[in-house]
Length: 172
Image (cartoon, rainbow, N blue to C red):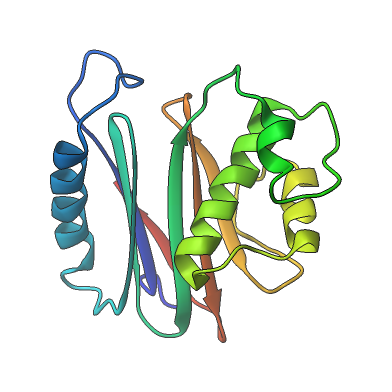
């Protein structure tokens, strides 16, 4: 297994408050710079970017990775979680915990970036019910995920598909 088939990183836009809204123009410029840093020597063929408030996240990958998506979200504790997820899951369990919602929501968005379609209901149910994990794991439909909190107020998901073992590296 190589250590550089998939690389991802996060950049913090200087701000007195990480939860403060930052203009898209600034976010986009920071994401582009981070992508240039991550993807220069990786021979990357796939690229995915995300931004939320004062954070940007980028993932890049090369074969054997065949699909890639990344998403980062600021975790607002007072959103109507069940109502939001009901658009994707007909039978949403209630109540939904904040962390479970954001792990599921970032999975949804990363999946859409990777495949340009929403995930199947059974895979979404699996992610919603899954406990927080420290390392990579695989869903029932064969997607690999790394999900973790960033700066205590953001949820990050990196999703990829690979036909062979691959290395994943978080670049700081």
